[in-house]
Amino acid sequence: MPTVERSLRLVNPALLDVLYRLVSGRLDWPLLIHGNVGRGKTAAALALCDIMPTACYWTAETLGSFVLGHEPAEVENEFRVIGEKSLGILDELGARANAGDLGRSVVQRFADAREMQAGRVAVYISNLTPAELARVLDDRIVSRIACGTIFRLDGNDRRRQS
Ligand SMILES: Nc1ncnc2c1ncn2[C@@H]1O[C@H](COP(=O)(O)OP(=O)(O)OP(=O)(O)O)[C@@H](O)[C@H]1O
Ligand SMILES: [Mg+2]
Image (cartoon, rainbow, N blue to C red; front, side):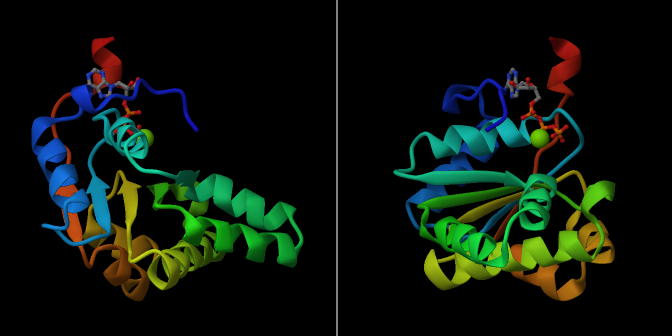
C-alpha cells in the first residue's frame, strides 16, 4: 500500500461523515471519490482500511500489471481474493496510462468481484469527474462505480503545503 499518512483524524470532515454513514449503512456503496491531485483521496481511503477487518488496495495500473504478469488461474484467484475482503479500494481510475482495454477490463473485473461477493463495499478514486470517467472508461462501467455515493474532495493540494 502507498506510504501516505493515514489517519481518520486527518480526513476532511465532510468526507469523514460520509465514511461513517457508509459503514453504518445509511449511505449506499460503492463510494466514488473524485478530485484534483493531492487533496487527500488516497489518504482517506487508506484510513478507512484501518477500521475494516480486511482490505485490499490496488491502483488501476498495478492491477493491470498484475493481470499482464500472471497466469490466468492466478489472476482468477486474485480477483476472488479481492471479492473476499471487507473493503476493496481501486485508485487512480482513468489515468492516461490505464485508459485502454486493459484498464477498462480490470475495473470491470474488480467491480464484478465486489458486487458478487462483497455487497458493493468498495471505494473508487479518480482525478476525473464521473462524466470525464465515462468518456475515458465506458458508460456501463462508470454507471456501476458511480451507482452508490459520490463525493468530490476539494480543498488545497496537501502536497504543496508540506
Ligand atoms: N488532511 C490532511 N492533512 C495533512 N496532510 C494530508 C491530509 N490528507 C492527506 N495528506 C497528505 O497529503 C498528501 C497527498 O494526499 P493523497 O496522496 O491522499 O492525495 P490524493 O488526493 O490521493 O492525490 P492524487 O490525486 O495525486 O493521487 C499525502 O502525503 C498525504 O499524507
Ligand atoms: Mg491518490
